[in-house]
Amino acid sequence: MQKNNFDIKKLANSREVSLATVLLVLCAFISFCNGTFITPKNLNNMFVNYAIYMILALGMMCVLIIGEIDISIGSTIAISGMSAALVLREHQSMPTIVVFMIALAVGAFCGFVIGLVIAKGRVISIIATLGFMNIFRGSTYLLAKNQWVAAYQITDSFKGFAIGKYLTFGLMNNMIFVAGVCYIVFFYFLKYTRTGRKIYAVGSNSEAAQVSGINIDKIRIMVYIIMGMLCGLSGALWVSIYASAQGDMATGIEMDIIAACVIGGVSLNGGRGNVIGVLLGALTIAVLGNGLPLIGVSQFWLDAIKGLIIIVAVILNVVMQRSIDKNNLKRREI
Image (cartoon, helix red, strand yellow):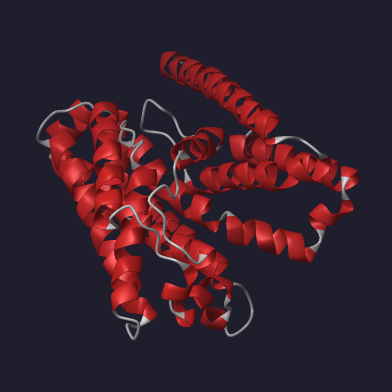
């Protein structure tokens, strides 16, 4: 009986429950101010429009867990999506799945190069990804010869993927389904596989991880490849949902993705974070982005509110980590 009480108390004090409570209160407030927010149509649009953000947050979570960062994801999305769109423009009969595979391959290659420079070149991740952000963005413009791929140049079947429901036989939108599958896969991968535990070990204490036989460089490269593949997937989805490919697409998306992770409890120092928290963090960004304009909040205030939330989330992360460390120290002394 005491064990059950302890578990309930631990659950009630968990960050995920607190964040879920705040999210529900925020939804209730927005719904009270504007009843259209909670309608099935608006909620569906919100999940579809922010499915890409939710997918990218998973990759960023892995990068942050190993104690690194990636601010090049917007450019990786652009070059992946543009590459797929250009191939599709020249080969209209190409199946949708092949177009997605091309985007995934381009994204994986970008991630591999970044990971290689960071792991083997010993370049600080923020410097490396800042450089590649400009390299990939410039390459996107050069690849497309500073032109767009317009809607009429993209096949109806590819554009229809973002609004279709055929993956679930009409039950839910394809974008939502893909995001859901990604979360299930990453939840299992990080929680129940040896490689997932190695990712946490590298972020918690890289020296100890190396002593225990973990190939740190291999893990770092792998994580950036995963991030690149998710960017490639997102690039193809971006082209599908917006029915065009532009050189400046996904510019500045990095900040929202990092914000989703930080709000979800992922530590910027590495070693901490989980899929449930990141999902709640991404949903918070989605609710803010979709709901606040409905109650008359301008885009300028929206950016300011996001910045304030990031600062508060970081402070809470630091306070909670100190509390955890203090409790662990007391237990050792006992």
